[in-house]
Image (cartoon, rainbow, N blue to C red; front, side):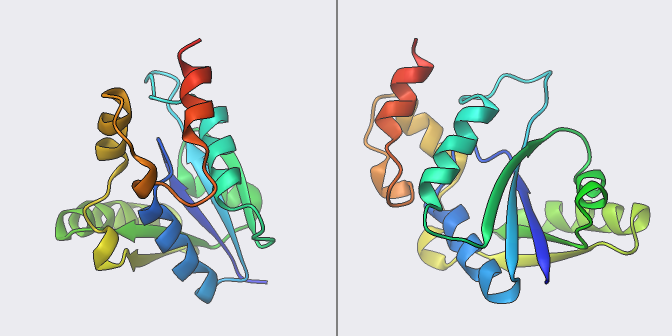
Length: 160
């Protein structure tokens, strides 16, 4: 079974992320969405809430798992026995950054490969940063989130 890890902060998971996931599922039998977090940084949503949001978004997809991790993605790959990393691209700037990270990963872990998947043009402008800004300012971010995500519930939890 060909399995890939799709790492990111996913704060929050957007329709762009979902689009990349759908493409990844065409290439791999199973995709593990790995929610990365840095204990030194405060995210908009805590990692466990991000996982809940993603699980809502991928409900019904049997070949998708979700986990949280900290540290290097290649260490997670080694821990899980996974040889493939998926990285979504929106812009050429994303490609430049992701290419550098992929090259460093390849140097540290030659047996782990990175596959770049561009988001479709319709979603190329959507970033978690944009969605967070909409949410912070009480705007309607629904069109930027995957179907099935009840963001209001998570915002209410966040404000407690």
